Length: 326
Image (cartoon, rainbow, N blue to C red):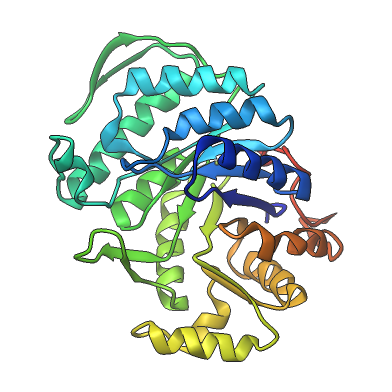
């Protein structure tokens, strides 16, 4: 098992407010701050992170996640590497297959079926991985083709790559090629184009992790597991909160609501115990939340309740700005 580390996914807002939110996250002990990628009236994700890099000194920076359908490998690798140099080697790249159906057609692009989008993501990830590592790349894929391409390498010897999503093909590819696998406990996109079916049962999570373990079996080190927490709720009635959420989510039981890593509720002490239990049970050691105020005290509590990891006593991450162990 890995040491725990904690991330904050920034919400919507203007660039100065997002940068200030990131500065506060650094101050209270988050290890990494992350941005999403939607084509609306919000700012560029990499642009926001450039502002955060200038305003902070230790916290790591990440995307959770860039929509692979928007990017060509050469330009993406160059932008990511440049930002890694600007930040002093603090960047982590997260990629996904996209899910918001209206964005691509609105920009004159085709929103392809999930299998096609995931295949395009897989090719992009492989090419960008090699470019960021400083290799010259020739790649003839179905969706991307490059010939003798070389771009600026990352500042870090190996910039961490996260691939997020679900399904056997995506998870198997991520297990073989990514440093981090992003889990959100979400299924197919609902007709409104934003909300998703939820997959917060223990059985669904363990089925996904079984795919990851099988595909990663030959790697010298298994990928880090990341969970994007959908709800953080501070309450003195943890059981009641679980029952209330279960009553609103079809197919979700209160037992699964209490166990799933995608919901964190209770007192701060209970949240800390839940995070530790999640790592102990499933190996999910990288936790991202969207509510800094409700969750920040948990970081200190986890640090004070260290548990042995492979014979070494550890607790929280490597401290603000600490990269994952590799």
